[in-house]
Length: 271
Image (cartoon, rainbow, N blue to C red; front, side):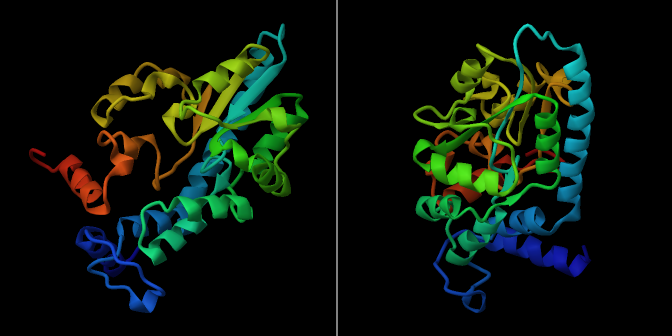
């Protein structure tokens, strides 16, 4: 990226505190836009490096899955568990809408986006899932999309080419944000040999409720499973890494979130 563009994004990121709705880009006041999303969204949408990381993850997953199948205890059917959003499908398109409206995470817009089925497949995702399916591995999709979006989500992922056996293989959120209960349901009847996600909570509940300062310490417990049992995809837009910055982070105003992030910045000396 050219220096002038980097400076542009840097100025945007550190000049935005308050939010005001805008109708089109020509009306945007770069001093007020909720622009902490801009650089992250452009990266998710435009960076070849982001797709490269995805291809790398799925190339590794394909090789490792073959090893895991060979070594696995086959007294139960083999299965993999995967997250959906930002692991299998890319929702960065709707974040462009968030930026235009200068909102953090408008729930109605997010729901309408999920219903629309416009999300694209993450680079390499469909090919990997077909690879697993062709080898007789059962695929379970566990997502925190609300259960009332079950039919819309099924339509979205099957249209994109993802193998989906039936509704019982798509486990959406009914009450808890934690996915542990749904993972345990699958593990009662299947030998789960791989899990894929963009968030550490997609693998285990040991990260649930852990503040940001402690997540790297907890990571030490599973580091040897990364690349073998756990495959993680990049997501700079949202996730446990962001909500763990502060209690009730998702309920804070734009200005309050901005101040939390500034407080968490580590400088060359002290914070």
